[in-house]
Amino acid sequence: MLYTVTLNPAVDKVIEIAGILEREQNNKIKKVLYDIGGKGCHVSTVFSALGLPNIATGFIGGVNGIKLVELMEEKNIKCEFINVENTNTRECTILVDESNLGSYMVTEAGELPDNRSYNKLLEKIQRDIKKEDIVAFSGSPAAGFSAEKYCEILKTLKNTGAKIFLDARDEYLKEAINLEPFFIKPNKHEFQELIGKKLERTEDFIEEIRKLNEKIEIVAVSLGDGGSIAGIKGKGVYGFIPPKVEVLSETGCGDIFVGGVISQYYLKKDIEEIFRFATAISASKATHFLSSDFSLEQTSKYLPYVEIIKYK
Image (cartoon, rainbow, N blue to C red; front, top):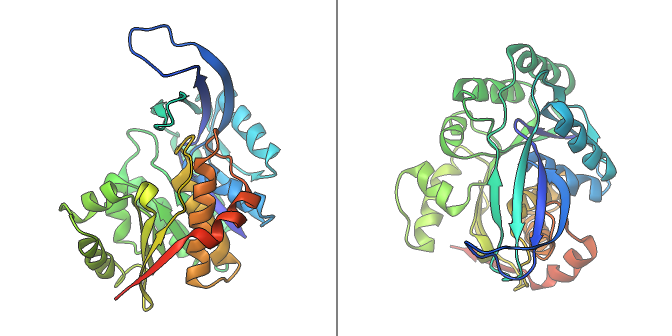
């Protein structure tokens, strides 16, 4: 079974602006749509689109929590979230104009789960997740959620024997590294923060990735429209460069990439196939307005145009 754990999911309110967004001007709205928000929830959309068995869990609450589950169930995602009383799942506002220069994202902080809900999640992990499962543990928790509690969840996951695919940042990523998850995917800025120094050349990234591969099986650093560099323990370091596409919204591209990696790993594809697919489906996401939207047909068309480099 595939699981996603999202500690601070969201409902995304996506606003399309007519023309170019300008300060001190009346920016008119073309349309407003609601979408699935939260890194792990985006990962779930890839699994369900491919028909893979999966369960989404984490914390939700209030009217927005109900809305989020409805949006996810529309995409055939099985939801088993912990409902936190007297809270409301956060709403994120995404502004997209006609400049094709990317989106603006404004996010609420989210609300902390109480101890009862926190313990319920730990109990669920211990009860349901098995050694043969794969878990995507994605995104940061609500502001004020301690790194200690975050690592306790990660330790509980690790104790099940399941493979952990981690997408985290800041203090949570730094602490999580010590627990040696199977996979991490920082972007280039998060990666430099993790290792504590600025990297100028591709060779510098490769050197640091190889060091982390001593503890972590797969280290993938996303480079935006430059693709990614991925180190696989015992197999070397690769570069994966996507085809050029017309970007409508980059929001969610990294999450869809992670979903692509995990889905193909689950299907027992080889490394080049895994990352070729992940790169192509992420490129497809970039051409879509909503953060959880992509096209498998489009992904198939992009596959031959993904450039793969094997670094020495």
